[in-house]
Amino acid sequence: MPLSAHIEEMVRRVLVVVVVMSFVSALTFPFADQLINNIWYSILGLADTETVQPRVYHPLALVLARLKVATLAGFVIAMPVFVYETYLFMRPGLYPRERRYYIAAIPTSLVLAALGVAFAFFIVLPLIFMYFLGYTEGTAEIAFGLSDTFGLMLLLMGFFALIFQIPLFIMLAVMMGVTSRTWLTDRRLYFWGGFLGLAFVTNPDPTGMAPIIVAISMVVLFEATLLLLKWTE
Image (cartoon, one colour):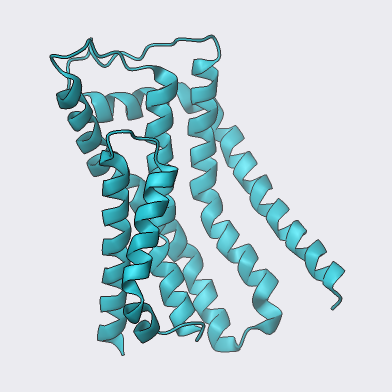
């Protein structure tokens, strides 16, 4: 197959993922207000309701928040579709055993993404905002802007949905012979440093709390996967 045909097929696979993501986002958008309220008060409800009331500082803030929550839903659902489309693109060059691995990875990807969102929602975000509240209490009056605060919530939930794919990517790479547990183990410090740098670059938190939690989570997932691979050898 010529290179142009490969590029054309790759573009077609990417478009499928984009269409699925857009479709799910469109279905979610009418329910965005309810989702925003549930997410907002579930995470910030540990504090006084008056304190955590969302503030809107520009006319498009609420619309953008609705778009963000709808996009997050589309992003999570599109993850297994991305894995499947990647499989279809690579299938001609895969052995039967490798094809089985990829097929099994599709539902696994969705489960891991859901676990990542749940981990951020129930554990990471409440801890971060409790820290924020304690950090500013007594120094300034706290006012949570809808756009910035909700943007941080969705960013971390989406990021953790992606982070929780680390075990899947490592397992697939090892099973398909792309890399080995020994190679990864010998270079673990490089991965740790990369995780830390990526966490600080992608998480806009000047206190450093969010990127530290993200980096620790990535390291724990990485090491847990290596330990699982060692047990299954």
